Length: 301
Length: 301
Image (tube, rainbow over all chains, first blue to last red):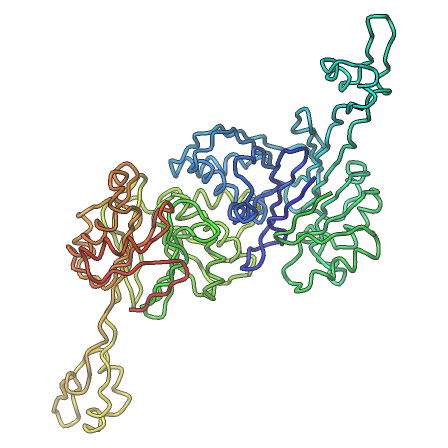
């Protein structure tokens, strides 16, 4: 699992920082999460091939999380993208994009699918044989979702030595990978576990931005491998959290601890702070395995 | 007159180039012309104070000319801009901006005025005591205007030596600056020209992007001090001009020559060319005083 931070600062883009956008690479698939202004240039800087982005998840309709979407869609079109593109985001996102496409007479040649979200309950919004993506309802000033990416268990892995010893033909390997026992011609049964290893452990990633401190999300994100949780403010500015719909680093760390996650990445820093190390310093007092997102960083777990 | 090129490349923003946007500074006022994605960051790089931008002119609704507008409007709001902001652009631009403001619940605290354009004739769209701005109807794939900025003549300038010699009190200077003669108590008249100089010469700037070669604009831009004319293609690709609604460098230079402008700035280069000097080389064969726009350049005339 790899998380490339294209941008992780709140509010306005600046010469040195970018608004929220990140690429999650899991199970060889890439998912773009949020798309602030400038995301397409950040993708280029990260040398991420545009053709590998087929799903985009937008948490909410504040500009620092989606103003780059229309530009990316438009660029995909100019570059003659063939693949379908799926956009998951709050109700209204389709109107915003289609109005601009209509007025600029720039209809995409590829298929563009919108999956508009309006439920306040967690729901399964995307699924294939490798991964399932669920919403994490967040509390912010506008309708907002985080996203939970859960790998599905992979196939069992053949224990080559054991399989060779038992003289198993390769044509049975697929069956073994799927967990079946093997019935041999003489009637004896080779039990699956004797010739296979368990599937690789699955991983999970939870993206939670933007939100106030909200313990209701804990059951949804419990035990995830990596939680990205916004930490817009330091503790000295905690009184700004409720009116603006944001969290402090300590609140993010508290959620991480209570949800028993393995790793926490902080981000969405207010640009009022010049030293983001203070976010880690504060979070460390509550939760051990805390990392600081920063534009250009790539995390591997 | 100062023209700051924030971006001057066509189509998609890249790590090294930006889509169209420029700031014209004339008579101590600043005007933003077009606003591709990333314009707000380019303004910051140029250290142009956001508060000095009170009028924005959008030529047409292709993304590389306006996708940065919503972000700029939103940032102005986050920074608690007090000034009114006036947007001049094609019909539809108001819907695009207001839909996004509505859905993000991010109403601006400052007054936002839209002046939507739909005429196919040149019209006066902005005027104050120092400048007048006219549209230049262009021919492109969608409804497009260029913009002509014409300084109004300033006040006459006092010839201090002559005025002192004639013993004129400073309280009459304003009257003299406005061009009046002075009738003295003894009945004699001091003729204005004997104690004043002509106003400083006025300047004019024409922005023409995007457009096919179109001689109909010549009467509108005749004799301007500076013409910015798009040159998307080199002559080798002239057959692309009509289908895409663009011009070559030689076509831009031909318009400059026929309109007898003083200086030509080329821009809106297709990103297919790695060496933009070729645009100048071609234009030079037709028109002498040609300059190449490039991101970050500032022209003073």
